[in-house]
Image (cartoon, rainbow, N blue to C red; front, side, top):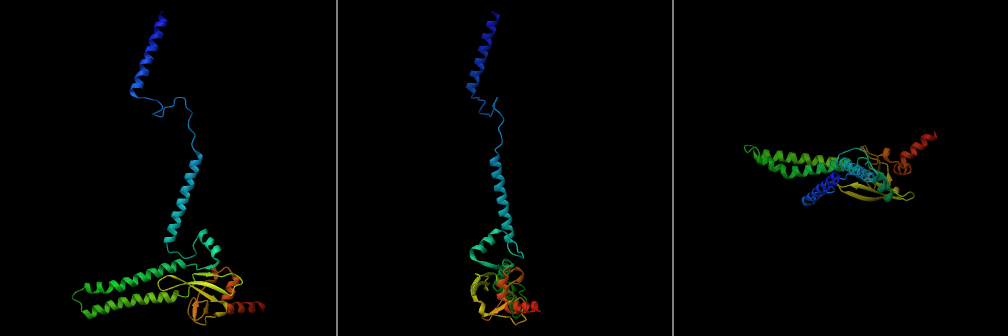
Length: 241
């Protein structure tokens, strides 16, 4: 009798506890309580995908940072190589991007000095003579314009890109204009002449214009020999001796 009464008391207490939990909304699965559930294994595939996306983001950030810097040398990466294969580019100027950035900086400085130089000169020092102010403003404009013109004269022969199909008698070059825009030109090998000038950084002359190709970065030796015919003939004669 005592055992029966004890079992009846335990059953009544367990029923009360279950009814109380049901009324209060308590559920062990709602709070992530799994008494007998095995420990969850980490998702390896998602971790690998996350690491790959982080590496791609870091590489893109480094590429954008490198492009914004002024650097000497050709651009790194496979994008330039794919462009060269598709478009037939056999030569790329090693400091093309640097020349463009410096030219844009010089043009912007010249425009600011021409537009704001006289205004700033006449607004400052009211006790100064007007003729003297005009002379100062003219000097600033002349200095900025002469610097921009000298820079353009110095880098105007620079060949930024050169396209040539082996066996063709013509080739295409990309030069830079006053406004730092690329101008394509088609030249013939028959029109190439030695520069015959003391002007620095000139490789050959064609149709009255000078052109410069960096021989160290022109890996196509057949093209380089066509661009410098007299130099190539001189080197071959020297070897024959």
